[in-house]
Image (cartoon, rainbow, N blue to C red; front, side, top):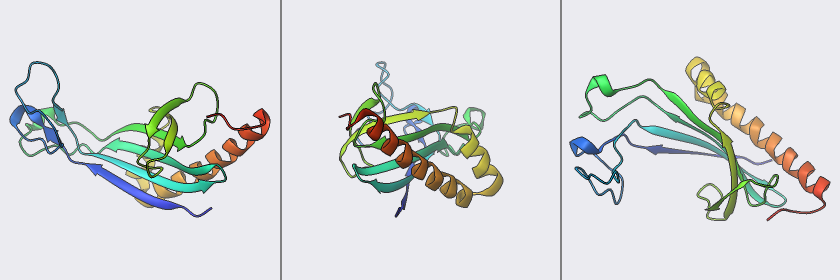
Length: 161
């Protein structure tokens, strides 16, 4: 399977101190909770491939622990894994979240499922061995996901949409 690697980085924000780079942020102060608060830089690594049903992708998302320069050091945290997930144009099983138009599937309608707990192994690999190992792990996960999708479709005799 041909695999494309994509990386998306969301910059850190500190809305209470007026440092938000997010489009459409209403700013601070707002008592309605509609600003982004204080957040670390976040990175999403995505492996995208093709299944016979359409595009598929797997992602690993983590917070780097790097905060905005205006954020006091006592608010900073450690790197933290958020999500390990898979995206496809068909459901792997009933009850999978229908996420709508998906950036990773080039705008196609997406079924998504993921786990924060399973993402910890990827953060450990990143810290221990760097991005090359994480890309290999994502490539392996993409192949496994493609195989599971094929088996699921064969078992139910069609595609869940």
